[in-house]
Image (cartoon, rainbow, N blue to C red; front, side):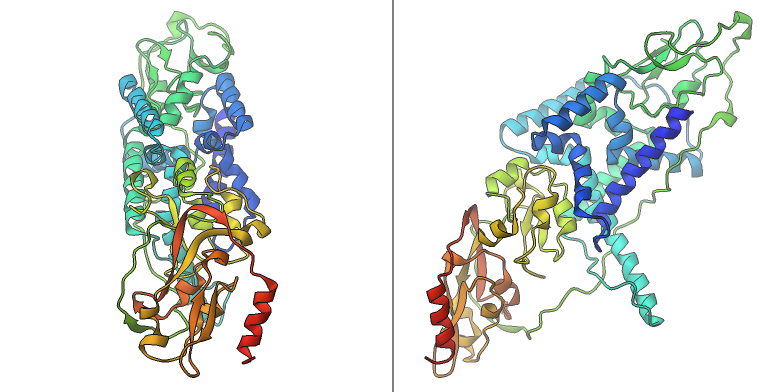
Length: 517
């Protein structure tokens, strides 16, 4: 009982921190909270964090799959769904399931083969932490933000402005449907059979299961005390207790400890050796036939997790300029724009597992899950999209929170010099040339003066670009009023480079030109 309570409390705390960090748009939790994410196995492996990998390995060899029962957010989500299923609806008891060894290691083989080919997308789809991150960002977060907007509307009706409106729309429909499909698959399996996903599909569970075969502390059955009633198997959501053979498959045991305390004959223990922790022997006459005892049903200490359909809503920020429809020349980016700190598109694809933490935490919401921009190998990796905003020149949040080393940490000075893309100007789309009217919005929004206004006709000025000093922030592209095709945009760099410095003499010359000298 004590072990069960401790595990549930720790698991609930871990889960709430993980979930709220993905939902927290007001930055209530500090960015240091992202350190929790590095204790996930796949991010630690991608980051080559030897300390975390060694710790998780030692813990598994010591006490089994504690990671799966206490730290993994997707595993805890499954526990919550299973708890709801058996609390509010009569569900059949769990039962022993034969191990799907060939399927489990076949999936691991496919993941390893894909990684050898440089395709991280397969691991991204199956990694439990990344799967949970996508569900939290693309399904739970829109619902959470819609609830915030509802409270904001109620508050404004009563002159209370504690809550404020935010954009609650889903990032992309593809990412939403992938996340929703993941939630449905994992949820249905958990609703019916507990931890089936963990013990059949999840590559992390398979690898940790291999280590847990030799765990020092484990759930054990005493054959002398076991009467084969099967009560323990009915409580085992891992389906790993065989009451007929009186054995526990430790490779599939997730250390939930539900079975402990259900046996009236004290045949189950968690400890060292076959008889560790066993009390006095029972006489054969005390053994009874199998009997269902409804009073032993344990209650979990989790919140009820409701499967909600993702809601979209909230008004998006409007550009301050009136949109004009003069842009007729289309453009196509040769390369998508990877976030600052990604180093290159190849580096991002190689390390990113599409957990979408950066997508959730971007304060201006310009990071979007890619569909085909990076190709199949970069499916759902983050890319920069300037439709609704642009990258803040003084923001380094995405580089500070990435747990996979896909986006390296940048200092503010490094961010100011990192060129993720270069500005491109299409003069024949510009309103200055087409409509012969002043604009200059792109120049006003450029933090590096890569876009400057120069004389054109009479009193008109037209943009002149210097791609060498551009950082690719997208301020010019976002603010350009021309539609359907903008007159200025950012072309992504396949490899990020350091931009050139803007010479002080040039700056003085530009300032003098502004005054007509």
